[in-house]
Length: 133
Image 1 (cartoon, rainbow, N blue to C red):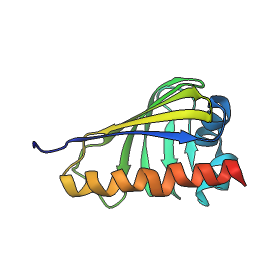
Image 2: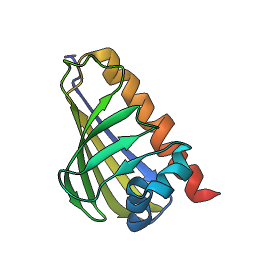
Image 3: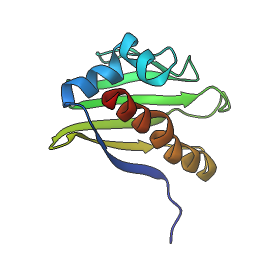
Image 4: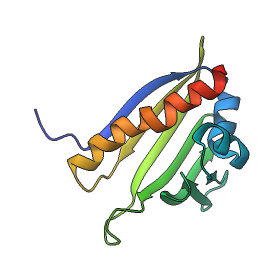
């Protein structure tokens, strides 16, 4: 099997596409589910920052409430390391929303594996907790 160079996950979130989109982009909503400061601008060229600034980037494309594309670079990555890219697609599902994440451009396989678990542990599961409590 070849080296994996991207993350492709699909996860059911128990909120409508509009609610999920708002939870991912609204500063107050981000704080509620992530327990940290964050922002995700709803326009191209805007700022992306989650987890108290641990990860930063630039918003590349937004189509509310179904698509968010932004660059992603955690603070511990070397300053010469390129930004990775995240594409979040939010589709209606009978349980709420089916969220797909495609995350590409990792500096190495270790970071890819950490992020694969991280998307579930720090984004999708907290979002579901937020929507079900």
